[in-house]
Amino acid sequence: MSQLDRYAVMGNPIAHSKSPMIHTLFARETGQKLEYRAILVELGQFADAVQAFRTEGGKGLNVTVPFKRDAWRLVDERSACAALAGAVNTIQFREDGTLYGDNTDGIGMIRDIRDNLGVALAGKRVLLLGAGGAVRGVLGPLLEEKPATVVIANRTPDRAQELADAFEEQGRVEGSSFADLDGTRYDIVINGTSASLKGEAPPLPEGILARDAFCYDMMYAAEPTAFMRWADDEGCERVADGLGMLVEQAAESFRLWRGVRPQTAPVIKAVREALLKG
Ligand code: ATR
Figure (tube, rainbow, N blue to C red):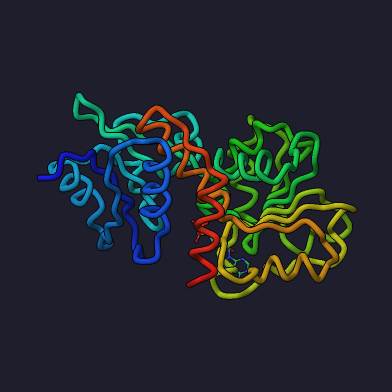
């Protein structure tokens, strides 16, 4: 049996996950000895898969679509961030046999936007598109940056309003439909809808970007996403995808498990190159 500490990411689908590459690069860079693999889990089988991984000596897990909610339910203890997000993307198997759940998606996105891309969030008018798990996961850390206001816009406006209500104690946040955005300008627009997966951009009114606005898609692909192309068409000069977020959330998971935070810039570069090669 392998002597290396074992980690994995669980999801469905999982074949194209970049997490094994990212964590292998982190381990090499920090001199940590571990193995990290991707595990495909059938729907309804998440708890059993976690138990099986624990039995074979697993130390920690990343959890991705569609199991983040199941992971939230399964863990024995949650970080404040995970509790608020209603989702867990990182599990630590503790020595006493209990499971600790964290959510590093939000801090990963903040680190990418604020530190890697140099875009301050404090005092800005922020528009968040979507009201599903992706947006819920980042709202807490986003509001901690003290933006002037956060507007959540969604195809189903009631979901945006529900989310705004759930986070009202964390900062200034309101819900909206896409059409009602007309007439207001935003400094930062973040796409957390899954529209990009279908090659679509959310139906946004024209002229909602402030001068020098910054647009960010939580999704990433080898080519610019439909939302990034929309931003470009609106004359936006600062546009980014979520590949940096992916690497940053992984770095936070790695730090939780191993007590050391890896350098992310070389890994973002390597993953981008791998993505472009296909
Ligand atoms: P996730 O956990 O990835 O956020 P989700 O909970 O299914 O997934 O949420 C998907 C989000 O993308 C929702 O906000 C959804 O809008 P609805 O709440 O109205 O369903 C949004 N979405 C999906 N496809 C979209 C599209 N083509 N245009 C605009 N919004 C879309």
